[in-house]
Structure formats: structure tokens, C-alpha cells
Image (cartoon, rainbow, N blue to C red; front, side, top):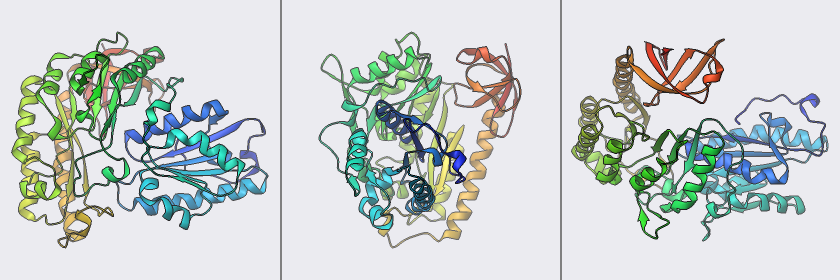
Length: 460
């Protein structure tokens, strides 16, 4: 769905004028991937077919993320390229619509239209269920449309169930928004308050996904373990109870969830890792820092030792569980002692994989206006040291898998001839020499070798 390079030539334009094409460029988290897929579902009844060629598309959608550094400028840079496509297609008599969706659209709505007046639609993450109506309105009248409010109705009430098999692994959003207001994060402002979908709608979507071949579902939410949806019995269900119900679907062999917050990691969810074989022994639990002083400045609501105690409980409940996390270095006010506390937490916990970043200011957040910003060269040095330690731990974890026989869910062809690739329970990429008939099946594989970003093995 993502393609940024294009060549403006006549041969790239489809001659079937009755068919409409849609091209979506997706940045950011898995929830954006899910949202992009749902936009495809919404526009399919209008006759739109996905193309990986931007210059072929009648509708170009840029689904944006506001988390990373310089996110807004990256959007405008990409829009400049899409503008060239739009102008060229318009010269050939092929009207083209550009839409900007996602978190940058939510945060920068009016600015986008001021700086890029050729954009036709700006819509936030909570309004994309209105996209078909917006496209029809733009087609009927000149001018742009901006919808970045937080509507009373839930977008999920208006979304069709996915119709096409997108593979053997699928994302399913169950919760959106955040009430935590961490000092560095814009999510409460771009995604809104925490909202959970009703249990039955999730079960219906999961059941349908299984009916079209999905074997593994990853439950998504900004604070997915804060899930509190209304159950079919009228009671409020938490994530543990939802996972227990999903695990009864006979075709569903694997359940994952992301992203979690330590404050919402309760005993029922920890016990679910012990009791539910379908719940994978892998957890992404961001801690951000190992310094209590910085955790307080971040407004995380937990201490480093409280995080350690959660990990101890998880490992007692599920000894083979693998852990992933997020880290931010150079948060305003962080000194060398704070950074060393983070390094010590990493040494204590031992992670299988992680994401680590330098702090970068997000407009409108508390940390952005702090007078105690850390110098860039200090952030660079700390990030390099942290990533070296994290990489060492990841390599060691992968190396410890060598010689073991573990179940692998094969999801597609590998890069080399005769190779197929899959995922371990610990979210490692694994490839073997094998027949494509194994794709979609979970098979026992002996791990023979640990490579830079994957494992290789032999079918047992």
C-alpha cells in the first residue's frame, strides 16, 4: 500500500475509465495500518480498487503519524510529490483527490490547508468513517473539507466488516485514545479519550477474520490493556476476559495485543498469560525510562521498581515470556544518573526486542515547553549506548533460540527461491526452505541459526 517513487508517464495511467483507483501511504503504528485497511473497505462499495502506483490513483490518501520527530514536515514533503501527480493527471483529464488522514491531520488540520491548498480532504482518526461522504461532496462542489472533530457517534458503528483476506495475521482495533497524558505524547490530543469497543462487535469481526483464513489476531489500542468494553451479558469486560472468549474460536491459534501501559497490567491479565495457550508468550510493555525522577516528570504513574515487580509476576506466571519495550532518552531534565538508572533497568529485565528514540518535542505537550532540554549531542551519545546494550540483549535472546524446536506460523514466501517465512511465538521472523503449501499453517521448526534480523530453521 506504500509507494513513494513515481514516474509521470502516460503509460502508467489505466485506460479503464470506469474503474477507480485508490492509493494509500501509511505511516506509523499498527493502528494506522488497521485504519488504512478499513478506509479501503469503506471505499470498495464506491468502486475503488487499491493500486500500488500513486500515479494511477484517482484518490491519494496519506495516513499520517505524529509521534516521530519532524512528522509534520515529512507530511508536507510527501504532499509536494503528490501535488505533482495531481497536476499531471488533471492535465490529462483525470481528476485526482488528495486526502490527509491520521494524527498529523488531527493536530495540524487548518495549517495543512493553508500550506497545501491543493489538498481536498483533511480528516482525523475518529472521522474516517465519513470518508465516502466527503469524497462525494468534493466531487459535487469545489473547495476543501476538514473534519477533525471528535464525533459523538463511534466510527466503528459505521465500518463494514473486512471482506478480503489480508493474510494469515490481522490487526483488530479494540480500544482507542488515551487518558494518561504523558508529558511527551500527543495521543490524547490526536486520538481523544480512551474508548473501548463493545465485546460483541469485536467477536463478530474476529469470527469473520477467522472465516477468511486468519490464524493470528493482534488486538490494538493506544492503551490496549485498559480495555473496558461492554459485554453481551451487560457487564464491563476487561482485556483478560475478552482474550479468554477469543481463545474459544476454533480457527484462531494465536492472540497478541499491543500497546500496553504498566498502570493497566493487572493480575487477571498476567494470569491470562498463564492460562490461555493461544495468548502468545510475548509482551510489549513500554517503560520509557528507568529513572523514578524522569518517570515522574513524564507523568507515567509508576516507578521503575513497580515495573520490575510486574515483570517478576509475568515471569512467574509464564516463565518463557519474552519482553519488549519503548525507551526515550534525553527527556527534559534527564541527567547522567537518570540515564544510568535506565541502563540498569535494561540489565535487570533483559529484553528480546525494543524500540528506543531520542526525545523530540511535540507541540502542545508539557515536555515541549520545559526549560531543561537536553543537548542533542548528549541525546545522541546516550541513545547509541542504550541501543548497543539493547542490541546485545536481542542478539543473545535470538541465539538462545538456536537448537530449540518451536511452533512457527508461516505467513508468506521468503526472499530467496524455495523459501517461506513465518513468525515465532516471540514475534521473531523465521524462514526455512519449504513448500508454499505450508503457508497458513503452524508447524514445528528446529531453529538452526540466528541471523541479524531473523532466524533460519528446518521443518520437523
